[in-house]
Length: 373
Ligand SMILES: *[C@@H]1O[C@H](CO)[C@@H](O)[C@H](O)[C@H]1NC(C)=O
Ligand SMILES: *[C@@H]1O[C@H](CO)[C@@H](O)[C@H](O)[C@H]1NC(C)=O
Ligand SMILES: *[C@@H]1O[C@H](CO)[C@@H](O)[C@H](O)[C@H]1NC(C)=O
Ligand SMILES: *[C@@H]1O[C@H](CO)[C@@H](O)[C@H](O)[C@H]1NC(C)=O
Ligand SMILES: *[C@@H]1O[C@H](CO)[C@@H](O)[C@H](O)[C@H]1NC(C)=O
Image (cartoon, rainbow, N blue to C red; front, side, top):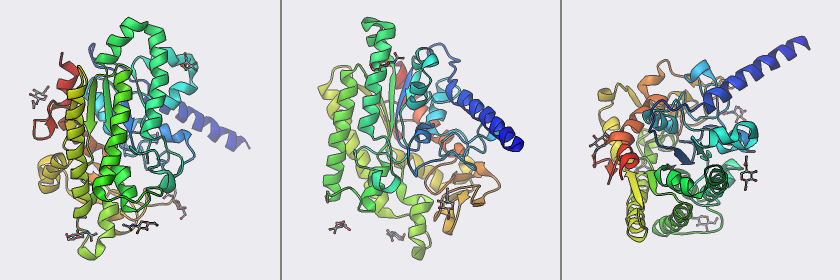
């Protein structure tokens, strides 16, 4: 019994450390923009810890390179892409998850003004995405509803006039869409059977609705991370074992078509809406240099996951309790687990998002998006 109590004290000590590490998004630079982050596992910093879902990363080896080696729910060995972007803007980590802020009312007002992360692993642009595969997830539409609550709280704290200027200067960042395409590939999008083009149109229609809702709540600066070449992640390569684990071209083409459709959508929105500003990444173009010349980026393995099981470590998740493979040098792998980049790869991606040229980021990069008048 004593032993049990001791370990639970240790656990709660570690857990509170992890909350501190997760929540103290200290601003080191005076004019860092406030960040509101939406999306999936690439940006989730603990949302899914609160959900009844199979999409979880709150156990080792997740977080092995995070401060104190604490698994926080991030699908990474360390900082994920949301953190890396926040760090480039001068914060220590991503802003905390909405569900953490909501639970801890005492520090709510103090924390909420530094931004909120709504991203939920397994979710997509469509309401139904991820439900069958993962169980409970927070869809983009629900994330926007949560933002509407936060909007009300902040407007109350700042007053209408100050709040309007606060929201118009904040960055609204999105990293979503991959799970919609994965669900489509599994033929799992509820009852609807659509062709690829129709499915993309359906996704863009919902994306449009959600962006307009945010605009109506005062959002003006939108940063969108497009879908990466999904066909090259270890989980998908493993499905193509008979071809030596080559990338599945069809899925990469689908991801590129999403990028093109999103570009048209954003052009339309900036035509329709006064002061609408955006920055869109071409995530396929961003990834190609690393896939083609990994050594230029200090990476040795772009094919297999550092942590996982089976062929290319792409056939099963990463889990210390299950004693899965773990590579020696996390920083020389592009992929951490069967779907997700390493901390190192997220850092490289964030650098391009922040300061990349027009080939990768158009019409502005994130640092320009934050500063533009
Ligand atoms: C935030 O707003 C919601 C919805 O209006 C409200 O229920 C909640 O109490 C508010 N939270 C705080 C701390 O003001
Ligand atoms: C997807 O599933 C539906 C219903 O189960 C089936 O009718 C359809 O042929 C499937 N489509 C593809 C592309 O596999
Ligand atoms: C598998 O690999 C081959 C060879 O690169 C590629 O042409 C094909 O698109 C891949 N996908 C599938 C589903 O087999
Ligand atoms: C660990 O193994 C069990 C039993 O095979 C499995 O149900 C579970 O999903 C595995 N956990 C992870 C995180 O892969
Ligand atoms: C993107 O950001 C950097 C740093 O803010 C800037 O110097 C550069 O000109 C930008 N890139 C592109 C296309 O303009």
